[in-house]
Image 1 (cartoon, rainbow, N blue to C red):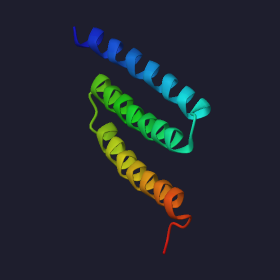
Image 2 (tube, helix red, strand yellow; image 1 turned 90 degrees about the vertical axis):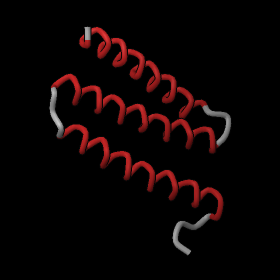
Image 3 (cartoon, one colour; image 1 turned 180 degrees about the vertical axis):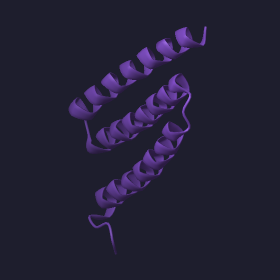
Image 4 (cartoon, one colour; image 1 turned 45 degrees about the vertical axis):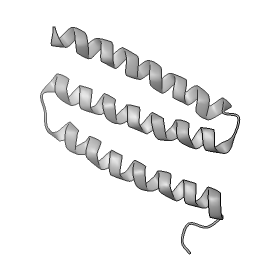
Length: 89
């Protein structure tokens, strides 16, 4: 039963990543593209967590946490650059 739920969740998150990639490439404006990339890394974190559940390993959860922290900092840096034109003041 858990295997079926994992496969369904895996398929849905892969579809979400494909749709986010489409929005990142075709997006009408730069903020839409930034949000699409931000959502894409969130979905990749979910895929890593699902893979960790499937393999019953705790290492993948630590990797997902590390990617979440790096993604948050990079999103803030890109948004700050977009608004002010400079990352470090």
